Image 1 (tube, rainbow, N blue to C red):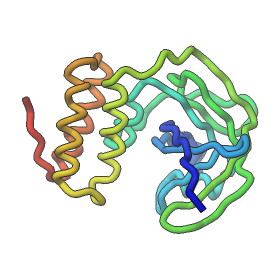
Image 2 (image 1 turned 120 degrees about the vertical axis):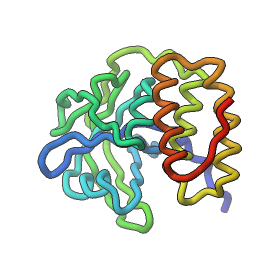
Image 3 (image 1 turned 90 degrees about the vertical axis):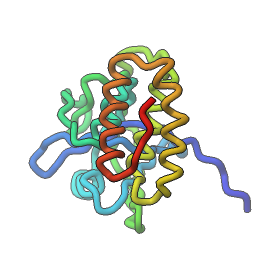
Image 4 (image 1 turned 60 degrees about the horizontal axis):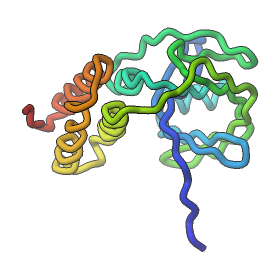
Length: 194
């Protein structure tokens, strides 16, 4: 049987810690039959929070600093209280979905949480990503997988993505890109600076 292609949406998932603090992490989610599937790696704060507190929010934002910040120790983003679940959503979210988790499969290395949509709210219109915003998100994905990828692959991808940064980045994209490049170089991967 042929495997179906799944659409994966790059979002920010906000969960609550045991102390009630908001924890926001970039994640690829999928939709299936009006439910959202979240598959965090184990161990992770998102996994622990979802296992304990079966509610979360899915944030849609064009502020790519949130994606880069989560991978580089910059997690202090303002949040607001949800309307129908015990949770928080990002203040800069263009839209957010409030989820109640209805199923949990504790497989390795990624658990699978399935959530039903309780409330979906649009705050501002999404006008689309420019090429630099896409480049930052792709670089964030690369940064999250440094231990899994060959050095040459990372260097090659970053070199290509930098073209979009040079051509279309604004201040937010330059800031996010800089955070990610520092993280990659701190990991020990040498990057060219033109």
